[in-house]
Amino acid sequence: ELDAVKKTVDDLKYTVMQQESRQAQFMKEMGQFIKEIAPQSVDIRSVFPPSSEETKKILLKQKEERSLPPPGNTLGNAKLSKNLKTLHALWMEYQFGLNGLKPAKDFNKKERGSCKVQYCRRKVFWSAVERFILKGFSWEAAIDRILDAYGSHKSVAKILKMMQKDRAANVDRLGV
Image 1 (tube, one colour):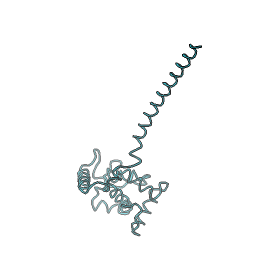
Image 2: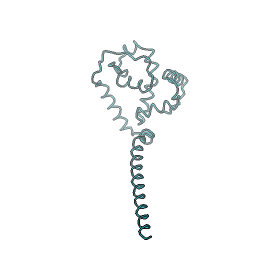
Image 3: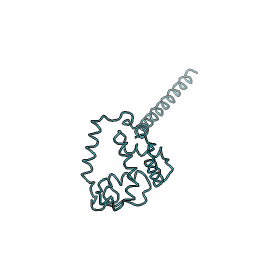
Image 4: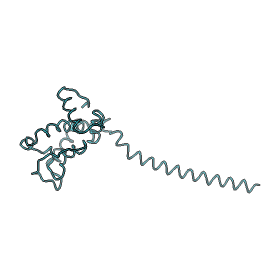
């Protein structure tokens, strides 16, 4: 009978060790998951905006980045893409250019004029993202805020029209 109790105790110890091992693995996976989603949930820079000195550094860095086009980008192709489906793609078009085209932020007056309607329609969005960046947000967090304010289920065209109407009526849904 004593041997049976010892065996039961040993079996219980083994079961507990297995459970602890599974729990440790689960906690490790949860930690990795939290590290992945934490930056998406809260941008720490939105809680602690940069100082004016940091803002100057950000602007200077952006100015330097603007003077150096990404590899493979031909600066002679100053066109805007048609029918972009996401605000992320719209920002990429402005910041880096799409499909080998020149970034919209680098357009000169003549180039802006050649696609004036499209450029003006998109400029309200680009300016909003830049204001968020100056406040310390990442561009991804800025776009998330814009989608929250105007509706993530709406099309890019609808959001741009709403942003233009808000600008004309001096309405600030974004708080920047």
